[in-house]
Length: 433
Image (cartoon, rainbow, N blue to C red; front, side, top):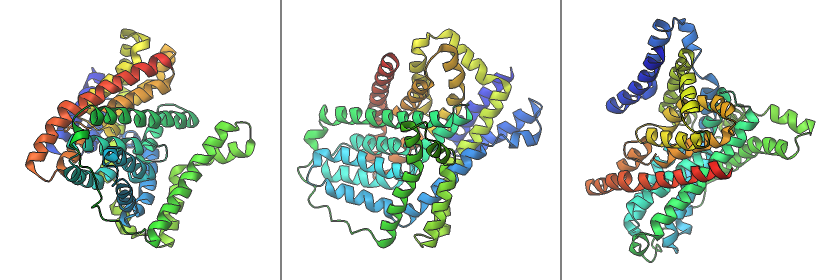
């Protein structure tokens, strides 16, 4: 009975958040308190301790550092340069948009930040080159998603944190994160290629983009910010990679055991402040507070669900009612339908990741396959106009006529195409891995 109430609370949080436009995390916190204290008999302190502090700290510290790259215009300038480089090859524009969005998001800007300034630029380019609005929307959306999934970027960090909270070792979570990044980079390229070269989009594009103005060079602050970002990535990525290559080296093992991206990002934030690369208050204001509250709030409610036994019951049902070979694919389908209306970061992965280890152990499945299938499925339909990313793209369209075209295209063309390719990929991954 209590498990059903908790599941209903999760659904209610999503529905209320969508209908009222109030952060889903706030509803989740309220339900966590009411159900935890008055339904399960937990103390208020116990419910407060369910706030995922580790994930909160990592997102806060990493996004604070990358906030300087947003505030001083480094990321936007990089996007302009990449678009300019593609001006003589208009048919490659969807790939340029995808690559630009991927690289900028991988450098830590995060999914929503990239969409916020890349989506308007992309839709403008679509108008000027006669590139399909749907093709442009898919390129920027999938590029931002894939880049944000990189192990040192926002979504990748969140995924690894959720895995560790679910009982996965940190090294395994890192490897799983790389697999998620690879999968969510390959699939969009297939989708974009199919949409551009097997529809009328290619023929409809203009022959040249030579009238695009040459962007100005990076300033001193922007060059320094870019250099700091690359150094921080090296500090975060090299130790675990070296340990994978040389697992018996004690020095490497020791250094890797002391590497924490949140603490490293905090040091680099101090360095950025000392070098006067941006305004501290503006960098603080650029933090994705809405995303942080949503992820941590839902995390609290998921912890209450675990306490009530709902997660174990769901894991038991999947483990006994579905053939083991199809479990990863089913997870991908479930996450795809959830993502039509809900956030991958705030709802889908916090709800599904905790049950993966127990199911994987019971059915003798590599948990990495299930984790990849979940994210691949969720992000395949994240372009839906009802989802957060799709709605942001829709809102970037300047004219009502364009918004109407985009709405239908995103819902009835882009999302279904992404879903079909994702299911095909998950089937291949499940049977070939």
